[in-house]
Length: 175
Image 1 (tube, rainbow, N blue to C red):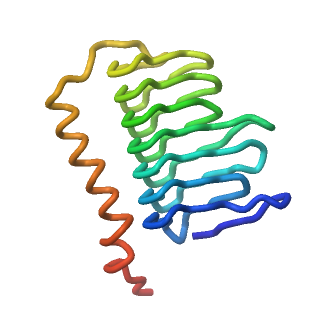
Image 2 (spheres, helix red, strand yellow):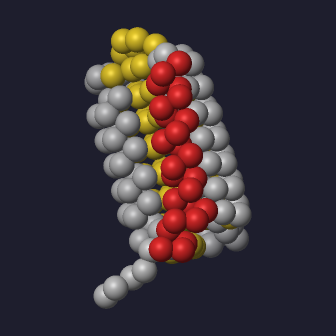
């Protein structure tokens, strides 16, 4: 991991968190316990503040950023899929942000909401709790059910296990 202090602010990561050595944490960034930050992810708290709740997975090549003097807040047990861009918004607990999705300024993604792969949640848009939103711009097309919650609770636990145990104990650089 490349962690950078910026203008007196240093990234902080909770116990049990794993940050890949090709990921960058810059400035005013706080990760909760048991978070996973994958290869190539960029979490830039150079202008604003970034808060990530416990058990959240920020997968490979994601970009997280906030506007000057403002805040990006991601709740607990959130999954931010590969290559997603999450900027100056609020993502509530247990939400899923699909691969390649964009969640833009001042938007809110509700608890257990799903933003589909490649979707764009536009400026100031709100995705309600438990809603499934897809498309450009994102439109609500359904609601999650109990089977979805059960399945994704298991997946979220797998990333926590990667962060706490599997990567620290088994990932070895070979070249």
